[in-house]
Image (cartoon, rainbow over all chains, first blue to last red; front, side, top):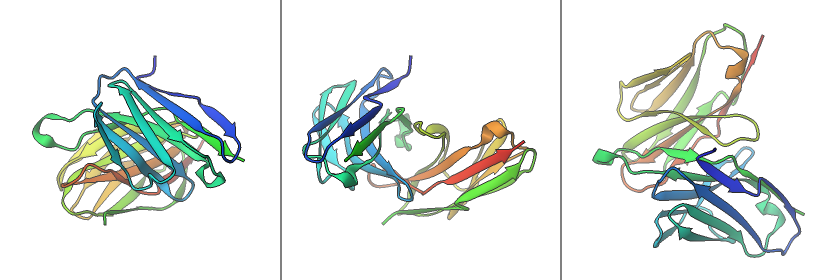
Length: 116
Length: 110
């Protein structure tokens, strides 16, 4: 079984609809992240969470919200979807390594979201 | 602001034709440089982390190196299964955000 799972894998929706993307992990990591990927723009951070009580905005959080329901679950919501939110969305997890060195992020398989 | 630039954007290789991918970066203190491989429609797969200039890491036909301004991913005698997009990312000394480059799409033809 995959360590990081995302549901749904594909979603087509209409402008104005509320959408929730879900991420679950079995790696036991404390840190979870949401990214979007657009052609030519690379991966950009939307939100991140270092534990259940910690939520932080990334570089492109406008139009999105998140919920950390448990250590293993982190969901991303689009309250009112718009066409320029059409993208690939990835969840990632990491665990702080000893010595304070850069922690490695492990990515889920992604959700392809299309907003019509 | 941290910046990562990868070149070339795309690379076509014949099987067995070795080459290198470049990742140039500017960051306020480097806490880690990461290489990922991404296949179409899939999530990035972790390859390497480099922490300091002069460090090298190898995995099968891939070797990553790091200087103070750039990192190289060398692909030796590539096979068609090495075809993928390779992503580079940096983490600054202060803060927790990864900055990704745009990636290099590699196509290895048999």
